[in-house]
Length: 416
Image (tube, one colour):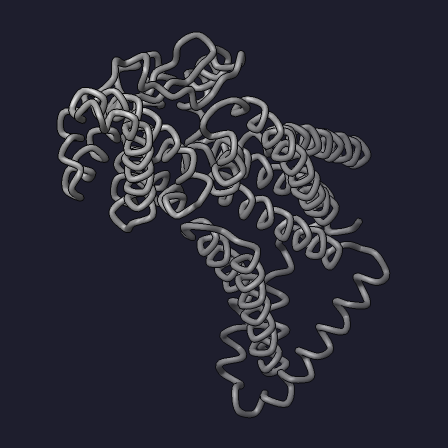
């Protein structure tokens, strides 16, 4: 009977091990997708975060040039200073019309440049991007009724509102003619901001992925936790999770490089061709921070898994730490006897609490960075070391009682 029970336990252990590795593989495959979806949800779909992200672009010279060239071109064309001057100047001064018109056109360009370089343009830029983000989401949702529409394989921006704003500023600065400049027809004031045959695919992906993006990252994290929890060799599984994180960062970095190249190709020939690097850098900054944080977390998990493993080096490291905390605790035993006894009895609960608090710090952080992870790890390690010192300060009989209480508990397998 005992042999049958032992065989059943071994079979159950193998089943748990296989299930843990299957769950790990699924989580590892989903991780790059989940992190990218989470970034898109937080940066591109969340309007306020998107505005906070792109607002600094108002000061970028390439953005100012891209917007300024289009607005200046439209205003100069509609102003038609050469023909206007031909009609109002006396016949003997008509030859001066091109020269004066050139001066007027230069003045328009200067005024546009001054508006774009002024603090007021930041408000204009935020307003445009608020419209752009909202309208682009509507366009991807199949409800294009704003300043941005999708036509075929192109994303189109209507600059009519910006032209009206700049017209008023020109009037305020002495160019009264600008008040009579007609806003050009829609087709003449549109800017192609993106051309890509993948837009239809993007719309489909948005329709499918938007409901999933909000919870996918948490589902993937849960899968990793379950893989570690059911594994028969948890230390090895923790190392595997860390390696999965590191590999995911490599995949994402390659994806970013590919995406930057694709963006350069899709923006080629548009007014935003020169500004694509600024756009790409600012829009992906939080994703890059997340990738770095994931890499740091992966390295940390590999180190934690190694420390808990059954390798000779890991055992020596644990022994060194244990002897240090035990020595420090024994020297404090006389002063902290009752306190030490309390922590010796409740040590496991405090260990769990420290781990939970460290996890909560990362979960509630608005932005998880590599430094956030490292500092959280540092404080968690310090807390655990202090806990071990306090528990080691318990009198010998209290320590024996604590060990006896924990003895019936099923040991955690941590061999590598």
